[in-house]
Length: 243
Image 1 (cartoon, rainbow, N blue to C red):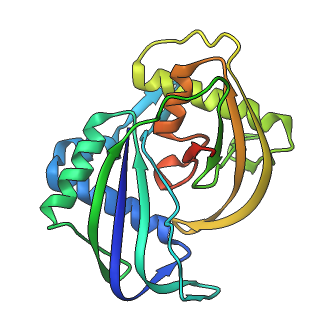
Image 2: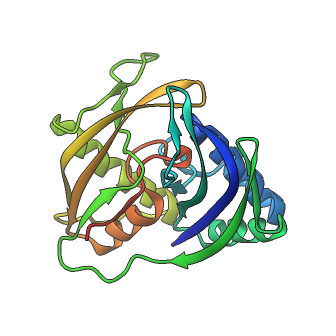
């Protein structure tokens, strides 16, 4: 399930390249306005599987036509499209209610944005083996030794899609609290474009790309709602249907 917001600022706003840190904080703030207990649980506990904890929400890049682009961010005014997703209806409701409680205004980056529209959407019916594209880049990494820095994988490395599939299965099982038979489920990717993105005082290697999934409608829908790869709750791994 998703929320699609149309935001507007009539005055020039500066949006830093590290905007994901501010957006993640904003999401928790909105949830906390409408459901403080859920916000605390999601931030402090979340969904656990095999020692890993997932927040199970994802959001898109800001779709924004800037007037100025610099080494530190974007500057401009007008409309911004922003999407958020989660398999948990509580998240969708809490964010939407939080926006209303703020009078349909969002204070971020030192500017006030009016929320002109907010729509709730779902993955439409798809043809067999649908193709998708990222609307926020995907992060995949492996830990090659205890205490070592994660190694970010390139989509040309066969371990990339293997890790994507394992991560998606783990998140599904964390949310549903049971195992799933995956059959011939698989993912393939192409046309990768690398980005080095600052978030929460680190830089993350991520990839915009196109992808195809097959073999399980349930896992495809979950990937659409919860995101692919790592750091979904920091604005990585959101996908949408191609075409």
